[in-house]
Image (tube, rainbow, N blue to C red; front, side, top):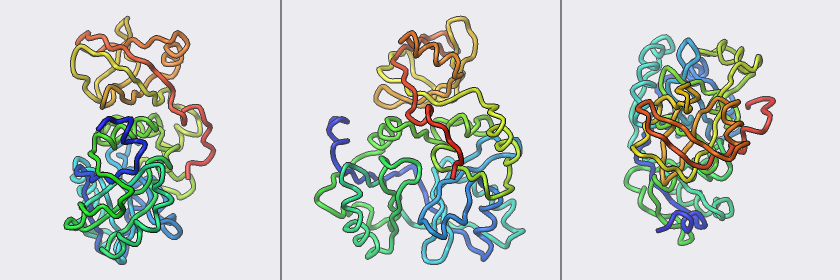
Length: 312
């Protein structure tokens, strides 16, 4: 089915690249509060929170959604990030008597033009199957995230919804300027400010200390990040683009980082001054490190021109 057509419909998309774990221990919330970027106290009045994990230099390691299920704090993350998060919990968890345990749950994206009107009907279906549903906090257009037991993932809760694949979901994220931590960012290297996590409800500036907090806060308040996120469409490239590889200009200068691409479009982390020049001329011409030229149409993210006064 054509991508344009499916995005005019309500979709039920199993995200097979995601996995769910729960934390065992009374201090689970305090542990995640101290090792991730967002404020777990937000779970007092919302179901799901998006957060990131950093190293001590303030560089990206992983991201996850956090929520409660039957009294246990749970994490939903990409399978690529699970070993990283498990390593952090194994390292710091014993100090809080906290352990991590896999859960037999599937993750599903439920989105579309009528998803909010259908929320109550879908929620009833999910609760009857011991699952949960919450609004994706990163962007309204991403709809809802659903957590269900594996045996129920294929049950579409309403006839006003059609099944989809992760390819459709990935394009939806790109179209709305939402990067994929496992696909677009580079572990130990990327700055989440340059990928707009502060605009996507992924950082709290009020909660206090966490690993990497000092670097992130200083960079934000002193405006010390010169790169930002841009969308590239109508991509023409002579070879496969590799996410995380340096993006060069026609003089060989590094001007950013290539992201992942899907259906001829993707997100780039670019030097903002250089990107604005490309926008002014209406011509994007970038190069891979092997000299391959890549062309396309560059547009700013909607969020990139808005001022963020207070992340969360």
